[in-house]
Image (tube, rainbow, N blue to C red):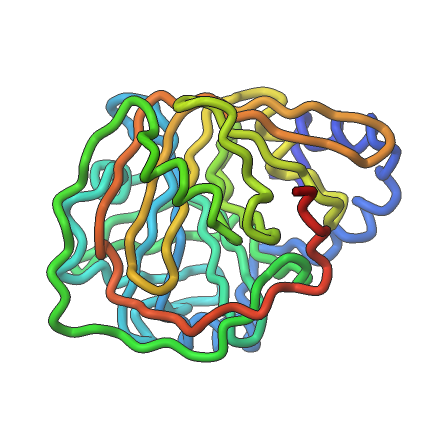
Length: 296
């Protein structure tokens, strides 16, 4: 596939950043370079985005393990050991289906670095492998620094609650978030990206509607380009101190303006709310200096 598909190219043109996007796009490749491979092997968390082959709904899910559970096993292949915690997630079927388009992102709050790898999935005896179509890193803008984490061996995950709208508890969870992950798709692939800001940057407009600002970034417009052709979207909010997750699937639409004040509105179809879903417990955040202040 080319560096950008038609949706991203259209948004870049509309925003007047085609030249900058071409320059940034030189960082996209298919090879997992040694520095990227070393980064992957240190990570205890990987976020995966894909469409459920049965329902067509797009979800974002968090996979965790001891460092090394994600690693490069070839110049263009990443392998993931899913482990015993895998088995109650909306992407289970997708992660067991050969040829599934997946987007992945590994984000390290300790170093404020992130790496994205998008490609096609192949199930393996211990999990799955992804043959890379795109491998790239992003700048640290809007990543909150968290100095350390611990992994609980004796936690008992809660049973997922399926919701069709957000109750006050989930609404407050979203308002308190400083980070979430976003999965989108296009005909030739999938993508998982990060969104960050000071708590309150995601607004709850109703029990089924959220909105947030689209802060200026790398000018590639991979996510908004996907939304231009396919509004299906998965969101993942997580509590970095308790391991609770809120997974949302629905549709998102971008409001594009030329003055940089873009926003995205998300409409919920279904949600999964899982207490203590993840074993990781992170230290308190140091908010990114790039985060705009939230009007009160």
